[in-house]
Image 1 (cartoon, rainbow, N blue to C red):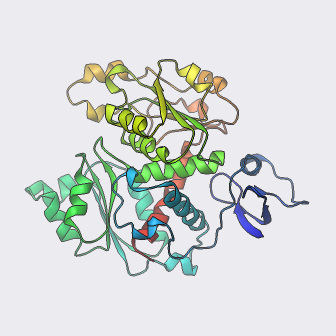
Image 2: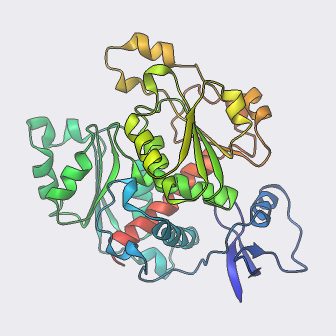
Image 3: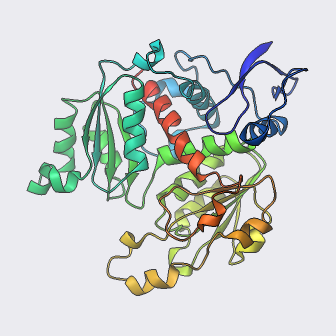
Length: 373
């Protein structure tokens, strides 16, 4: 059968008449034009075995995705749910202004309640809702400018806001806050990061990015670098990747911000291999994905001496890139400080800005799924 297949990194590029082989992978038809630059890298991703995924807008989910009410933690998703969500995300990348798809959430309101600073997460959620025709009710500094400053509880805030909105996106400084909000609400709640706890939508877009960049989610070696104790992004990604076979992790972090024992126990329970290392260059030469993170100063409180001791210990620079394989990628949830030098940005293996862009498509897909459209 013939499909419209996603064959390029970043915003999907369509090649009509791409065909699937017996392994359900995309191959370009005979006589397809030669491409160069970014398009060539995307075709290369196909030849490595990236699955063909439809780009017409899917209907009602057929996996357990159809029963998803809230998005609170990475552990809610299994492999089939992820693959189905990513098909929707592929289609979202093709939505054009003025098209019928761009109005699918017309009449719905989304409230973004952010008690911590955010650029990418808040703007990508609001951009996602806007691109699908929905309304946006937004507060960036909810702790300072909402009734929380007067002592209102989170539960009361949620019960009030759900009277105005059909879905709530919450970022909070306390681990477990999203679960509390979901327990108080009848409308869907999305966890946009709760302190050092979880960041499931970041894990979704990270997993989607790995799939788009490398063409697979199995048989991967992933190096997680930096603040692994406070980094909710890497904690959520580690949990989400347990859905796939033959995945292993390297943890590279200063002593005071090593990966938490709860994540190590979860990996052990699910048979996922992991090891801790201090050798960034050695790990870089082995992995398919090198995921760097910022040392989070805001989590140290008055322990600034510990923060300064951690900052700059592990930096991804030209030397690290030289050690990496040609088909590996570097990811980062952003913002970065100096843990990835700017000289890396021009390397085609630097995927972090493509990663950020993917957040828009994944969050568009998630809004569609949770609002049952």
